[in-house]
Length: 316
Image 1 (cartoon, rainbow, N blue to C red):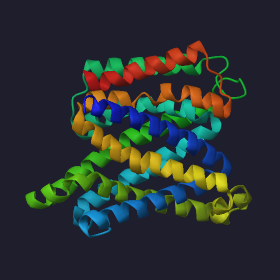
Image 2: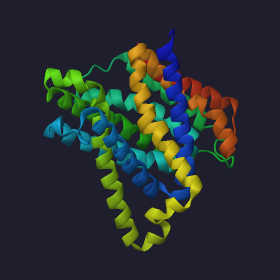
Image 3: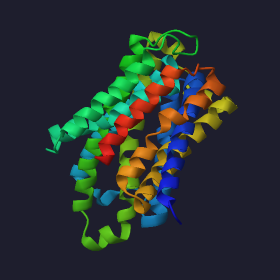
């Protein structure tokens, strides 16, 4: 089918838009800790079932110790620290601006790949970083940015930057872990199960993230502020939270990830990544419908400029 990879990439961007919006709903109703304990636990179960069906084993035991260590660390940085910032940013500034700040993730990825992997940081990458930052600056300096018409707060900005930093660093760590995973397999094993390696790697990251959130949840419940942390089972009594949780799970870390891997098989990785990065533009209208966030010329221009900056990381 003509342009199949491009169409799948746009579908991924739509899924990530849906995931961000549903995550904002679930976070505001159930809290960051409760939502992420359930989200990562269910993602682990679904990924285990996928591995069991495709490889006969529910865990990637053949990944090797080095791969497990790097992927567990990646889960701590990406799923725990990064997603904590991201989901809290949904509460403070909304999913629209949370996703806009996530366009900084490729910049952080390039930076940490330069430090940890020795990859070249070209002037194209530096220019792309500058353009991405310029787009975000245009959007967040709008005098009517948030739902109540107030400007973006410093807390919201720091949470957005922290989310992008966590994803960027976590991605580089995931690559290192995935490389160790691949090198630990024989050529025949790699040919047979190579297509599920990203899902097996993601499963290990989910283990790390779920354990961290569980520990933090129990520590928070044992303190005086336990009244501010909803009970873990409270989400099961809220139909809207359950629906939002399931939509977040399948549209983001499961189906969204799977389709993103499929897209690069049918089109160039740069084109696929660029189309997937259009989420900040796609989210403008639904965030207005769901959360009454104002759409201004400045916010549209800022989102477009930021997406142009992201595309430069992949197309040059």
